[in-house]
Each structure stands twice: as C-alpha cells, then as structure tokens.
Image (cartoon, rainbow, N blue to C red; front, side, top):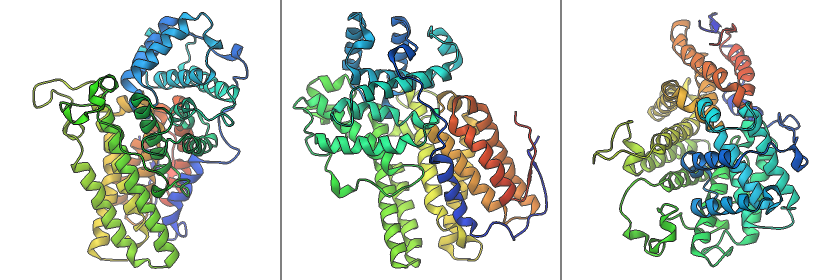
Length: 477
C-alpha cells in the first residue's frame, strides 16, 4: 500500500525549496547535541569480550568485506599482531592503540554480517547491533586511554579511518566530523602528507600510510553534509596507493609495481574513490568562488564540466568494476566475492554526486527551456531514479552491509524526487511517489541497525508531506 494519499498539488509550497534539500540533509546528518550515541564503555569490564574463535571469524570476514573500505591495516601484519595479542594471555592489557584498531575493525566486520553469519560466529551477545555499539565504544575507550590527542601515532589515524565508517551507523553524529579533522591533523604532524611519508622507513608501512591518508581525505572531501574543507589540494603531496594486494606489498613488486599482472585488486576501489573525491572537491571550491563573485551564469558551465569529468572517471575504471554482472569474467575466471559489492558501491557513489552536482541548478529547471538546463535536469533525475532502482534491486545485499553512505544517497534521491513532484500534476507525480515508497521501505528494513536510517524515516515523512502536499499513511512493510 502506497503511504501517500494523493491531494491536488499546489505551487504555493515551501519558499526557496531548492535550498531545503541541502538544509534537511545537513540537519539529518549533523545535529549538535542530538547524537543518538552515548558512550557506555568507561572501563575494560564494560567491554563484551569474545572468544578467540569468534575473533578469528570476525577478522577474516573483515578481511574480505570491510578492510578495503577503510584500508586501515595491512592484513598479514594485522593477523600476526592478532595472534600475538591472544597468545599473550592479557589481551585487554595490550597496546591500547592497537586495541582501538582491533575493536573498530571487528565492529565494522560484524556490522557487515547478516543474521546467519552472526549466529555462526559464536558472538558473546545475541544482539549484534548492541555489540557493534559496544565495540565501537571500546575503540573510543582505548583511544582515550592512549591519550591520542597528545601522542600522535600512525595507529591513531588507522583507528580513526575505521571509526569514520561506523560513527553514523551507531548514531555518533557529532563526533564523526571532529574525529575526521583530528585524523587529518595528526597525519600532518606525523608527515603522512608528504612523499614519501615520514612515519617510517619501511616501504610497507609507508604504503599503509598513503592508504590511510587518502581514506581521511576521501572522508573529508566527500563528507555529508558538505562543510568548509579543513585540508586542500595544495596542502599535501601524496601519490595514489599502488595497485597491489596486501600480500604483494611484501614482495619485490612493491619496488616494481608495473610488473604486476592485471587482475581485480581491492585497492582499485580506493583509487576510484580518490578520483571521485578530487572531482567533488574541485567542484565545491569553484562553486564557492562563483558564488562570492556573484557570477551565477558560470555555474552552468561548472556543472557541465564537472559532470563530464565524473563521466570520464567512470569510463576509465578497471573493467571488473564496470562490467561485473554476477557471473564469470570474460576470461572465464570467477571474480572474488567483494567485486560485485565494490561495483555496486561505486555506482551508488558516482550516481549520488552526479545527482547532487546537477541539482544545484534545480531552482532554474522549471523557468527555463535552455538545453543545458534540460540536460542537467535529465541527468539529476535519472541519477536519482537509478539510485532508487539499484537499492530496490540489491536490497538484501545493501541491507546486509548497512553502510551509512547508502542510506544518505537514497535519502537524497528521495528528497530530489519529492521536490520535483511539486511541479507535476497528480498522475505524473505518482511515478515519483512510488519510487519514494521504495526508499521508505528500505529505511524501515534497516532501521534497527542504522541510527541514520531511523532518523531519516521521520524527516522524510515530514518533508514529503510539506513538499508534495501529501498525507503520509503509515504502512511500511
């Protein structure tokens, strides 16, 4: 049942509605003093400790499904450190910064498990969402115990890189941007912003430093909501991470990366996200300059140039991130299990930013017949509709992984479609409303595991009532 009862659409709705989408996105993603998370781990006895067997399961699950999201650890080294920590017999009394990394790592790994996988893991608590929050809290506890603000360390930036992917899911909205800026500043103090990085003379550690640094920059330049950047392109010089697996970093290939055989590697995803982040950063900087100068006519050219730049990045992606369809590759080999997830995540990310970039012209669509504006409108709405279609098609997979970025992208798409619906008659608006219902269904589906999805449900209901002049009837499946 559709959750809207159609009324006659009116034109006398929200004033300056073209800005209300950004305002609501900001409100949902960052509300001062209204974070849903409260730190409950204040002592080691507050931590839900797990068995060695369970820890092994979470570690290896994370190696496959989450390590390439944050790229915070070198897998082989981390596994050896993990074995050593358990053999010590005093696990929770070990290196506090390593423990911050560890609990962040297993929290994210568990967040990316479905219910069956979580049950088979032998967790110390049946409620996996509560465990994710507990282990997220444990990571923060150990960071604070290490006095991380006064003792700059590479491990601190590694822990922060992981926690940035968890904060919004557990509802820690206000800490997330503070950790983000702190991680970048600590990285600068350590010389992670230089080439080669000054954190170590070891080539493998230097490569991990590059990966972590770019994770922090990606989070900063693709942050939602958008804020004034705390670091700019001219502030650092760090090359892209090598297209090598973690295992290959320990071989002679680290000195001769061009000798590698072409095949899917997790780091391809990282480098694609770096290019996306650079493109969005440049767009935001140039748009700010245009607005200050009051030269609004240049905005159309900037939108067109940026959208074409994004399209070119997509065309240059490795083939496995473009052509994957769930079956074997063209050469007959089966792709690793994480390839489809990477391809889906990248698709959503590029669609999201193409939608947002073209949406800055939304307030002019209805009053102009300009071909460029018509193109911008078509790209924006097509991107929004494709985001909804992808989430509907991959609902189970996306719900399993529950990243906050997917929720944010879908929320933004729903707001875009709802805003456009106000310009349409009842019959034409119904198609948009049906897609918005898909968004409501997904948020309802994952709300128990995502504080952001829970918050989005209420805000989207109010927004759709205001913007579309619709009544929201409560039937979510």
